Image 1: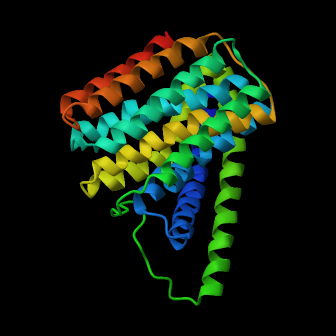
Image 2: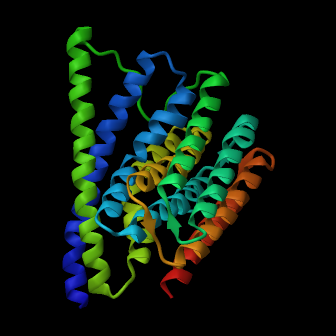
Length: 317
């Protein structure tokens, strides 16, 4: 059984690589298109980059739900959000510290907490209906509206540098469109094989699909967030990394699960409630810590990481 599980990890790892490549191509081109429409860099970070890095979550959750693996679909969302703030944000805070703005705490931190609370509400009966999916999507549109209505200062985009395209505008537009389609197609293919591989690994290792979805699948689909956040942290812009991660969490809770459940109702295991309550607590704690002196220090980052790891241990045991 152990040998079979190890063999099954090979296609799982390859699927993660394919997802990462597709997301990187998609995000870079999507960010360029957004700039051409005159969006500020901070809005690009909180929307296009956050959504782009969450594209694997969309593809995996939709694919899992359509083939009847509801636990993987929802666990991917909950696990990715835990990983984003517990491991990625916590890890960045441990290494370089993270400063936050009053607007990030008031607007985006609040949105993260409220979206997680709404997520818990729709999961409470262990079923997400199409109507509840629509409610999640409406809430997401509301968040986007607030982002675009409130003007943001222009800041450096640490993820994708501004590069002038040497080609003429028509050729550059066609090339960008091809890269967007190619990146999205790669994400969809990678997501499909990731779900199939995850089911095989769960069966081989004797673990539930929820556990695999919350850990291995969630970490795999969060790979783009890791790359984007590390790039920001290396430039000393931990606040932008935090904005991207918070935006990704709102996107995952509202849009990813909203689209997935609108396409097909989802049935989940009771384990989802405990883990989502844990996520809500971690989200509230993160918002409070960001609001304290507008900074996440080394100790706070270590605490977030320890809390996330504790959840994984409790679920596995």
